[in-house]
Length: 178
Image 1 (cartoon, helix red, strand yellow):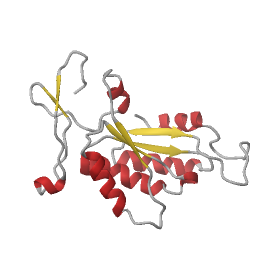
Image 2: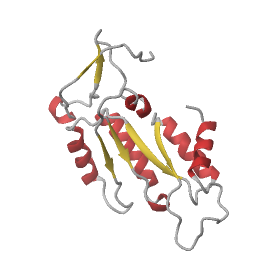
Image 3: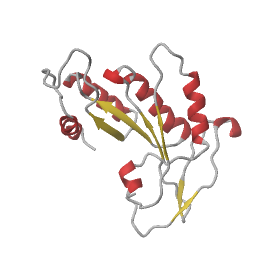
């Protein structure tokens, strides 16, 4: 159901993790006065439009040859702060792109916190971007930060890529729907 401006929500003042309850229950962050659950997968723009103070954190995925064990512990620790969302960066030249998706998915599904996945487009083909956007949709990651990204060494801003600027990525994202 769409959220209306005059609806009243009660914040939950606690967070829990899987170990506390022994289950993988999700954290529901907001309840309508009727007790109806509001899905945590809201768009960040809607969260920011509520005109309240927000708390967000950012995670940098480790390089592909490093274990994700430490990042799981970091996410667990961050989740106790009950952030409104967690931003997950995209490594230079897409070096950690698969990990961005994996971590964003964990943030949402395991911890019940909206994820903001970064997506860079410089040096990426239209086919690569389309695949990434479809994968984000399949995993219900609705919040994406479109960035041009750093130009790889040895290239110039005028190199013949499918995307040279973030606005081109945004236009491509719009063709994939909401």
